[in-house]
Length: 329
Image (cartoon, rainbow, N blue to C red; front, side, top):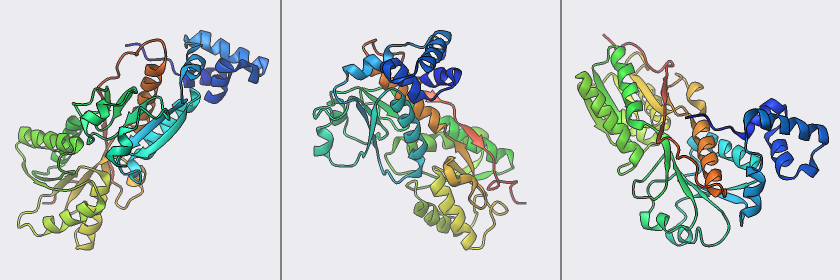
C-alpha cells in the first residue's frame, strides 16, 4: 500500500511547521505570499490533498477529538498523546484527554453532548454496549475489544512476547518465568499466551505469576521467585514498570541482575534506558501508533469517506540492554 502523505511531509519539503501548512491551506490570508507559495509547491510535489484540513474543520461541530485512556498517570501513554496532539493540531483540532474510568453515566453521555467529534480509545475494558452506543467515529489503540464496533491499531503482542523468549533462550536460559498483567486484560492475555507458545515451541521449562503491570506487582513477584527451590534464570514481565519493580526488589534481596537472573520488560518507557541496570525490553512504536491512529480518525471525520483501515498490528522489536545476560552456570 502506498504510504499516506502527511501534513508533516509537506512541512518538511516547504521548510515550515505543520501549523503553518495548516494555516496556508485553511486560512491562506493569514500567511505571507512567499510562504503560501512554498506550501502550495510542496503540496503539488507530494500530492497532499489541499482542501482536507480546511474542509474538515469547517464541517465539524466541536472541532475537537477526545482521547480516553485508563490511568492517565501511566508514563506509557505520554508519547502516544504527544503524537496525537501533533497530528490533531496540524488539522486544526483541539485534543481533550480523559480517564476512561470516569463512571458509566459520564461515559454514556459521550457522543451526545457535542463536546467532541471523534474518540480515540485506549481501553478495552469498557462495556461494549456503552461504546457501541456512542454516535461518534471511534478507533481503538493498543488495547482492544473485539465486541467494539471500531477499527484497531496495536502491536502484535503475542509475537512480541515470543521475541522476549527467543532472546532469553539464545542466552542459554532454560527455565523462564512470566509475570503477567491484570486478569481479563487483553494485553496481559495475549502476552501470556505468546510467552507460553514460545516456551512450548522451544521446549523450555516455564512458570507464570500473576501481576498487574505495576512496580508493586513486580516487587511481590520477586519475593515469590526468591522463595523457589529452583528459581527461573530468565524473567519476562508484561510491562516495564513490573520489570523495574522486580529488578529493584531482587537486588534488595541480594541477587545480581543479570548475574543471577535476566529480566525483560515490555513497552520501552522513557526511563527504561536510564534505570540501573538499563532494561532490555520490547519497544512499542508509540509515536507511530498515536500518529497513525490520529490520521485515521481525522480521515473518518472528513467528507471524503472512511480511509483504508489501518493495519491491525504494527511491528514491535526487542531492545537489548544490561538487564539480560548469559544464563548462570
